Length: 163
Image (cartoon, rainbow, N blue to C red; front, side, top):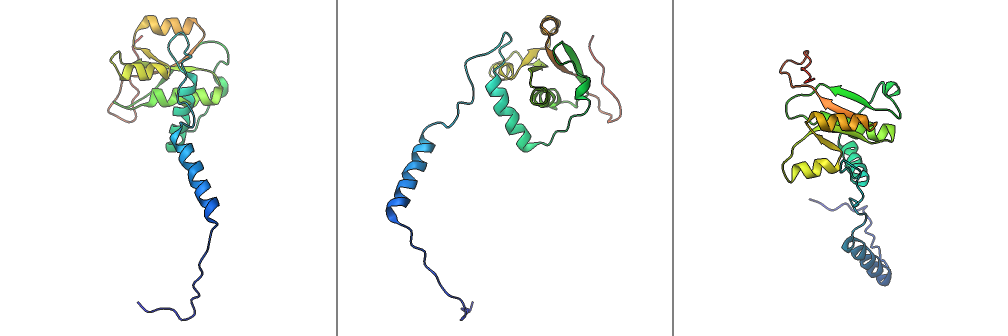
């Protein structure tokens, strides 16, 4: 590699005191938590609104979700939304997170497991057990609930819904 004769080298000198102060401030910022990811205030079903906001922001940073027909959903009353999902897909969870951000009201999803630690974490996101009494209780309380249909292997068929 040959040196370019027209290249002019420049050295930038920064004030030492300012650099050290900036490093100390950055280290102090990293050492303390910036924002608590969750609060200890949960609703009747164990949903933590702050955690839902943080997870919603993280999911929107990764996946681009577009919603259509949101104006047909009730703003204050209960409703059941059924989505078609593939096996092991997180469509009900992502739908609930996207609708929560769009409608500015809690939207729950059905199908959280009752096994620690996943069940407890999904409960904090608004998950309900796949039991009729939990679903009916949420609908009677005026909540919007997202439920996934049974998975289908064919992309053009809709799964069945357990009534």
